[in-house]
Amino acid sequence: MASSKSSVTIEVAGHEVTVTSPDKVLFPDAGHTKLDLVRYYLAVADGALRGVTGRPMILKRFVKGITEEAFFQKRAPSNTPDWIEVATLRYASGTFADEIVVRDAAALAWVVNLGCVDLNPHPVQAEDLDHPDELRIDLDPVPGVAWEQIVDVALVVKAVLEDHGLTAWPKTSGSRGFHIYSRIDPHWTYPQVRLAAQTVAREVENRAPDLATSRWWKEERQGVFVDFNQNAKDRTVASAYSVRAVPDARVSTPLDWSEVAGCRPETLTLPTVLERFAAIGDPWRGIEHAAGSLDALLELAQRLGPAEKPPKGATPDGRRASTMPLLEIARAKTKEEALAGLDRWKARHPEAVPHLEPADVLVDGMRGSSTVWYRVRVNLQHVPQPQRPEQEPLEVDYNPWAGRSWPNQTRSDQTTAEEPAP
Image (cartoon, rainbow, N blue to C red; front, top):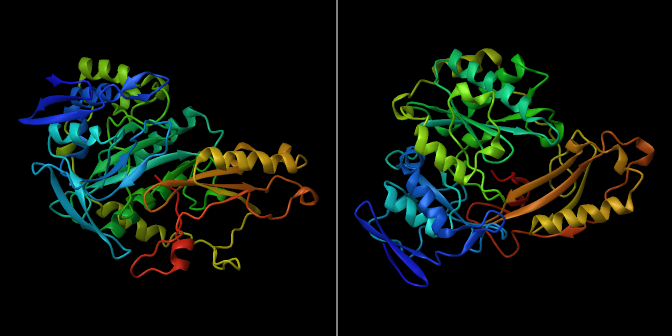
């Protein structure tokens, strides 16, 4: 390994990879540097590559460390080495992008050097971009839900998948939730895979209605949302062994099902997962040989009938009409600005605040063109009618789409198609 004050060059898988600013601290609280992160991914490369090999990847780059917002880069950088593979993905907006495809540890180290703290691959292989080979279930708890309830829902998801012929592979998300993956034969289109995942969500709700929900609109959820929309085209999920951009450097950690009931996400961090991997290896060994069929889930979808559709209608500005008494408080470039706006709103309406439950305050990271922006809404369902404030001008009114346009897409499309970021 050659080094200088500003860079370190390492030899990996027959290639030289230069790590720039190796001493840059990416995780101030934990003290982990960029070189620490590169070394981590190389140490767990056998497991990390199992989750990303051959898959086009969106680059989520924290170039200034995790204390600054990341930006999303779909297109491969202009200085991409010729030994790094790319695949051309076409998007509904009419655009396309040549995205990075990681095949070995050298490419893995190269993308981490770009500031990619976590890895965000698509559920398809570069050889067949239209047929996913992975079904992904993301358990997303509403605020106030205990970890034990998330684990209980994960076990129900496992049962549903296994009852329909699929092998379930669990991992922590490294954030608040939990992931369950199933490898599938690449015979089905994105809409069919999403329908199968939605069917899993509906069946989980049927089996555990007090624990889980498949309701699409966030303000209508209680318990753990079984998120099936991560299977829509263009969506990505942090892959196995991804370090997440949280202060203690938690890791999205693959588990054996025997570990799930007793696992605690706060114990699975960069240094502890390094030790764990060295001791036991990867619990997901063999996942690449466990592909199954969606036929049974798609047959269940037919028996269940069409899923409940969201209410029709829209507000005067073109957005959907909610069945809940929602107020929008802020749209901000950063989470700090959004929450500061919420604090100002609370200070003006002290009569309403005591009635708000944790799940009534909806803070969403929303996907912009290349960054995440933040929306804050308040659900007044628990506030007595006489004490409910009216909709007011937004505390912060940031427009992430200002000055931008897309082929085949109108401004109305851009406004109404907003979805939370993964």
